[in-house]
Length: 120
Image 1 (cartoon, rainbow, N blue to C red):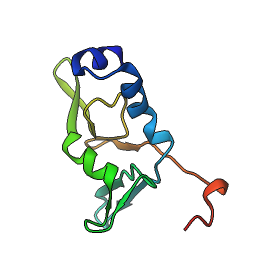
Image 2 (tube, rainbow, N blue to C red; image 1 turned 135 degrees about the vertical axis):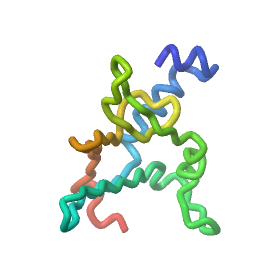
Image 3 (cartoon, rainbow, N blue to C red; image 1 turned 90 degrees about the vertical axis):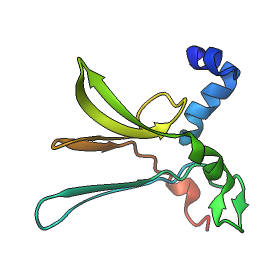
């Protein structure tokens, strides 16, 4: 994260906070379904920024709007061979969701339980 800090000009503390934000304010959902032909579909939402400001005009969380321009699609390669693809945010260290054609999918899972029951 030091390298990201140096290149971006952001303090290391902000880069670190950005990279652990997922652990604090998320209620993400992943769904993998298979149709009658055996084809798999992988859907994912990233609910970043829950409780940090609802925009009633746009019906969205303010943090989600700030993150939209930072969405990137990445290809992970070794020796020129495509290993898998992922969708992430510029500056995020790690993989939240990945897909490998004809092989598998991965979604990081964050689940808050008893502490959040009945919050709505």
